[in-house]
Image (cartoon, rainbow, N blue to C red; front, side, top):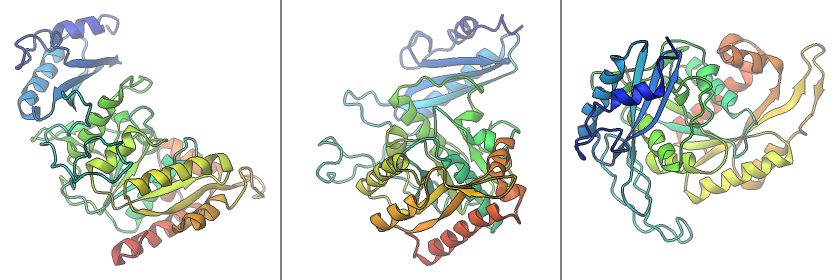
Length: 381
C-alpha cells in the first residue's frame, strides 16, 4: 500500500486544487513547495503571498481534502508558509497577520542600510517569552530548555515550549510521544500537551527522519507561523513560553527577535573555550538586536561518574561563569554532565519531573526559582 502512495500521486491529486490568483492548479502555480510521506502520513507545504492567508485558508483545506481521497492515506496535513513577493527579499509576515508597521531607521551598522525589520507583535495570552540560545550546537541547550520549562511548571507557572529549530527539532522526543497537533475551529494549530506543558515543534509536523530542505525564506515563514499561528493560550494564558533556539545567529534567531517581543534570552555554554567563542557571538547578536540577556548557564560543568560519583572536568570548569562576569550578565548556575539527565531526556521525561527530589533536578529548580523572582520583581537581567 505504501509504495502506491507516491509523491506523484499526491501531486496529481493536488492538481485538482485551483489557485485563486492564477486560475491554474496550485502545482502549476508553484505554490506546493514540499511534499513528504511516511507511514501513510502526508505533509504538504503550501507557499502563499503576504496578506493572503484568509483567501488561501480555503485552498489549504481543499489540499487536505484532495489528498485524503487517495487510497492508503492515513492522515494529511497542509501547512501554509508566507513569503515575500518583493524583490528585496524582506522577511515575510506570519500567515494570517498583516505586515507590522515599520520601525524608525535602524541604528548604524544594523541591517547594512536596508529597510528596518517589522515591529515585534506580542502573542495574545503569553505573558513572557524567554529564548534559550547557545551559539554552538551540542552543548545541551535543548535539554536545558525542557528542564527549565519543567522547573517553571513545577513551581506553579503555566508553561509552553516552542522548538525553533526547523532543521533539527528535538523537543518532540525529549517531551515524549503522544497525540499530534490538531487544528482549532479557527484553523489555528493546537499545540500538543506534554507533562502539563504546551509544546510545538516541526518534529510534530514532519515525519521523523525526513530532512527539512528549506531555504531561508521558508524557515522565516515557518517560525512566524508557529509563533502567531498556534493557539498557545486556547485554555488559559501562559505565564511563560520557552523558545529553544537552534545553534548559530541566523534566520531563526533574527526572525524571533523581529517577530515577537522577547522578555529576554538565556545563553547556555559548556566551559570549554571553543563553545564560549560561539556563546560570545550569540551574546553579541542579542546585544545588537537590543534583546535583554537574562543570564548564562554553564552546562556539562563537570562529569559525574554514575558508578563512583567522582567528578572529572572533561570540558574544563568555570569558563561560562568567567564569561558572564566579563560581559557583566548574571551567572545563573552550573549543570553537571550526568548519565541520568541524558537518559531521562531521551526517554521523554525531563529529569526535573522524573527525579524531582534529586540533586540534578534541584539545580534546574533553583535556576528557575531565581529567574521567576527576578522576572516578577523586575530585577531579572
